[in-house]
Amino acid sequence: MSDTGEPLSMIDEAAVMAAELRHDPYDFTYIEQALPARLKDDVLADAPHIPDRGSYGLPSLVRGPHFDAVIGDLLSTRFRHLVEQKFDTDLSNRPPCIVMMGNTTGNYNEGYAHPDSKHKIITVLLGFSREWPYERGRLRVLRSENRDDYAFEFAPEFGRMLMFRVCDRSWHGFLPQKGQRMSLQLCYVDSAAYVRKEYWRHSASAYAKSIPLLRKAIDWAPRRLPGAK
Image 1 (cartoon, rainbow, N blue to C red):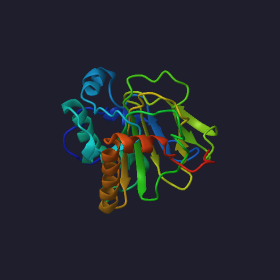
Image 2 (image 1 turned 60 degrees about the vertical axis):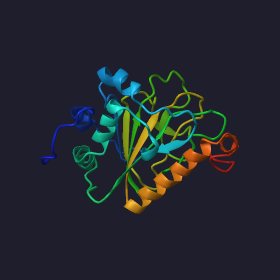
Image 3 (image 1 turned 90 degrees about the vertical axis):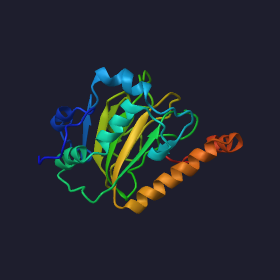
Image 4 (image 1 turned 90 degrees about the horizontal axis):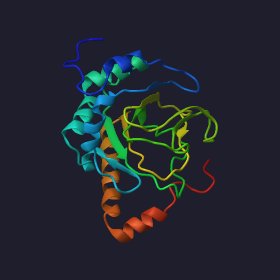
């Protein structure tokens, strides 16, 4: 790999490089401890407080220095090169977009199966839950849009990372479960315009959730039409 500047300060580069690229049911790789366990308390102490369900864009995430250092690693050229090397693809003109969720209610169709937007090229998911003792709510790599038809699953706990190449069959999701489900999503996308649109959309949603009556309406709104698997 060519010189990409200073080593990452938080993410374990060796663990990312050593992770196997799997091809069934689509291209993905899993890193059990992308963030060293010794960083857990400091990073989680500086993590954003997300009291509501749904995802929040990076501009809305209030965070301390240790968590911000993780963000810095994820947005760095050096990390991008690790992802490029893993998937043998050029992401130099693919801007990053980061959103994060903090809670799930378990009361509606959260985690519905989807392959990700056609605007996304590579998706990186990184867990930040202090613990996840539930059987439900584990992220599943799916073979189809049926959430019970899975090839791999893992708990969204601190430091666990999944990367996958987005395609029309990159189905993934999780079964609804109430809990503090902290998970960050980094996507390399096809345009800066898409990043701006996503951040605006999540910002508008965050504002609506700050108003009690609107938040209640959002809590009752379905994420997807009935019949989703």
